[in-house]
Length: 136
Image 1 (cartoon, rainbow, N blue to C red):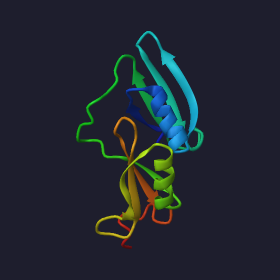
Image 2 (tube, rainbow, N blue to C red; image 1 turned 60 degrees about the vertical axis):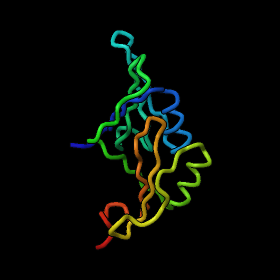
Image 3 (cartoon, rainbow, N blue to C red; image 1 turned 120 degrees about the horizontal axis):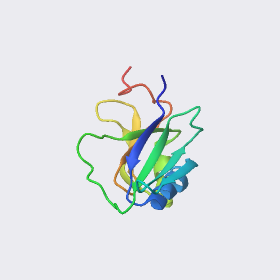
């Protein structure tokens, strides 16, 4: 088995594609439309779907916002330098919600940004990725 994708419902497909490609540096891998059921899809990621997990952006025609709820937490992305990534994201119009620094109770360096629909994206420095709180 392999993780394929995470699906996010978005209120403006073009705005979300721009954020994930221009601000986070992902590639637009493919798009499709389903006129019968009134939705459009865009798949974005850092690599091909055959090799890596990607994000599926789903736009239900005529819906421009969603309730975030309390179950979903965040998407995590590995970066070389969290502070530099925050600065680049900010310069490209992205919203930084937590500046780079150690996670509470550990040493792993993280930051948080938010996509146009309010989804949280955690940036984890690559040297710390996969180490939990970084206390080991």
